Image (cartoon, rainbow, N blue to C red; front, side, top):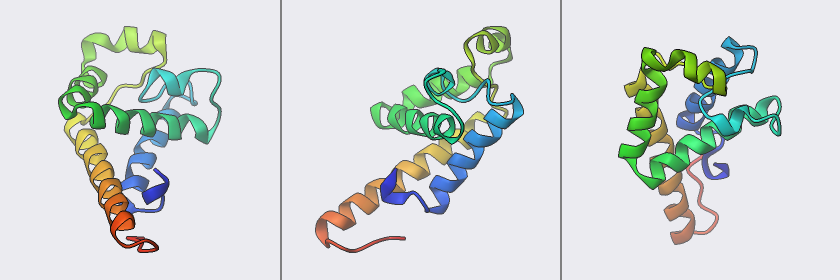
Length: 120
């Protein structure tokens, strides 16, 4: 995400990931990997955002399915056991991730075409 680390789209995604973690005193977040003890502090937030971006790049439908799982109240107990937060608005999170990915891809292409050019 270095391509667009300060972009509004990226900052919005990081803010949502941080808000999820703060709500649980950093015990639950948007991904299980980000909840692993290996990560601490802001690294947990960055890992959550990175994993969501990777899911979108793999398949936007995969990300949508995963985020819907995060929003489904039927899985609240299970998510709590494995360090995952509940998402209140899955479509907003999915869109936020997509915008972050789109911005990064545009920045990458711009840098390849015109070295030194920045969208920042």
